[in-house]
Image (cartoon, rainbow over all chains, first blue to last red):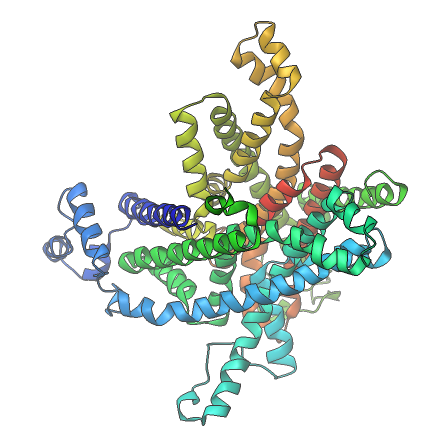
Length: 324
Length: 294
């Protein structure tokens, strides 16, 4: 079981390397020169040239790439052109916020989505099934950023219940522990709800399909013929088998989930990797763009590995090395 | 249960609703100059006409079905012209990604050995990238325009089609009719063009219907972030962005284009679902691919 996982990890590292390399060369061919940006609008050509050589931009491209990759691999991610802060610090501060938001919303949207899908599959064709299908298609179609604005409108502007910006209040550092937890939960509420809602639809649709596909398969027929209670058959036999493709889906859908997070973070000013990335892209802050891309790719690859581990745990057939 | 009466009836309802909504949206887009005030960027007396509620008639006697925005522009007119961008960009992007996807997928299925391996590896690699990250990057690096958005969406959306086409081609090649054609002495090229591609049409159409919905959502997202269609040219995404500051006073500015987006994307999804159930049994695979398309 260890060997395939190690191979997978190696493939994951290759993906991360591929991503940063792709982004490095994209940044290179793109119009817009970081040296000109850094030197400022009033700089003379000589000053821009000095800046270029300070950044190493005047060297041949392969040399720039090799040098950058070496520094990047050693953890020297440079400084932000816009903020002047070390990029590593910026991202070390940002990634836990993203991971927290993504993990919690995945947990909620898969739990609720699976529940919805199972309810629909067991009452396939009924009015309830149709109503829930309409709901899940609508959730699936909602643009996350628009839903976010609508939730802000209702819960922040109209009801004045929940904060719409950031991960904690301005006074968070001065609050006692209990009040601090309440404060961070209140800030989490809207971003988490938005991400969860847009995630539920796809999961429910998929689970419903997977459960209905199993209907009529021999092992379910056997279980029923043995006289097992239909609820027992549903949970222990049908759902358990339907969950294996769902776990695979979980791993494969991580890039999409992260993509959704980018928009949500931008709207709610959530201090995560997505917001850092959007701001860096808009300001052409090349070192930050590169590092934020690498961190997001790493989060996605790590999540994929985790999902594959879960599949191996849930589905004995994939544990090839112990099978014989 | 597939095939019984209730499912068929429901299936038809979905197709009818999906087609109906899409048809109306296309008509509004095509006939935008006729069904609206005619110019999406025109401003009259800004102070007198701004932030009028839906259904209001302004001081000049012009009726505003969906109200006006903070510059006094008619929201319905902007919505109708924005439909041109949304539907046009969505369709063109999907045509591009389907073309690339078919080429990559079919080539990988026919060519054995290292060509196939490289193509599949590239597809898996591209599928592992967070699409929005790539979109943001590409859209930000080149100055934003409709062409850039179409290219970027097309170039980042072909992988699901490629995988679909590859999987279907592999299973088709093993089927008796392909073997029969091979036994009759048909060339590989002929088998692909005359026998495989027509059989691939179904899953590709389903993927396209769902893909257009995704592309429309992504275009609106890019425009919302200011990296897509640039104001004053209306797109549903940049209309929502413009309505963001007026959520309190004029929720219709951001509300209307958002509802339009949801309706069109739901219609694409319903149509895709209905087609898929009617035409193909490979439900689960495609369902998974469409969730991943985001």
